[in-house]
Image 1 (cartoon, rainbow, N blue to C red):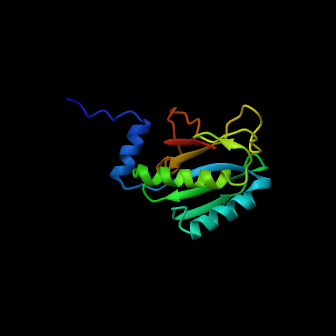
Image 2 (cartoon, rainbow, N blue to C red; image 1 turned 30 degrees about the vertical axis):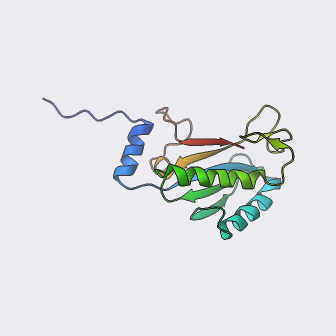
Image 3 (spheres, helix red, strand yellow; image 1 turned 90 degrees about the vertical axis):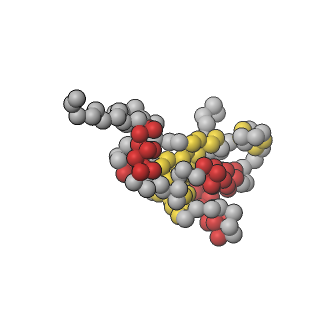
Length: 153
């Protein structure tokens, strides 16, 4: 018998490695227009202070490719704790919706959505940090999906 063949690289194998090596941090990401970032970060910071947003770090990232879009991230210690991960995502979504007009429905279908053009969805995505550490990003050559959860705004 020859040497054992390594398992193919998939989202599941990356998650298994993260659990094995205790690389369990992760973050919710939301792309935010320049005109909305200050208000949203202030609101999210207040919710963090008041115990309504349960994360260990809240960060605003400067624009990289699109100079009009900032990224806000809310970080969690354990991406395997689905209840706390989803709670954080829903809290960040509630902060992002705050002040927007005419949202309704379980998933907040925005009838008047200033974040996006008509027929374009705005979503929060959750990405475990292990994917970033392995330099696996969206549209990676392995075809691995790097986000575990998506919440439509």
